[in-house]
Length: 248
Image (tube, rainbow, N blue to C red):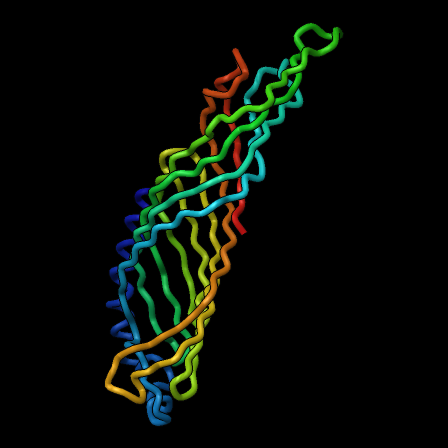
């Protein structure tokens, strides 16, 4: 994964140089001259930017399922309540305006953080002496923190569609990213869509001010695997787990 991230980083650095040559030969964005003749001020055809984001949010833990248990342990169910995730993301983005209203970009970055939920109950059965009845496993009223450290590399692509009239402008930014984790086995797939509308005050004054409001939709699917050592399961406490969660 590290090699993939290094290759992506090199690509992000080379892409603006290649884009610069293409932009010069093709005069990107396409129809640039026509747009400028109509009074539109266009951004540079290509760009490279560094970004930082810190996110603290509640999450929904869909399930915690265990595998690799002894065959005597059956119908094991783990109850959870609430969830919380905090993460920091440092990204490098290279973009190009293909049309005056259409931008494409590639992104790569480094993720650090953690995800945590609370285990409230563990239920199941121990089938030790077939055909005798199973022994129930039941632990209620628990409050055991279940924390996973997150560390990995992020890469993805996105697009921006923008337009405006006089001082009014609007845009929609949509991206898909995948994060491959290194501390534990797992990956995070994210789809983010961010619409914005705003007003450019610089068109009628000397103040370089733009004000905008927007919203954001996130669809995040996460799959993590690791070791569980603190569950109240006695001799079967060390086992493999599979955890999925979503954050709509």
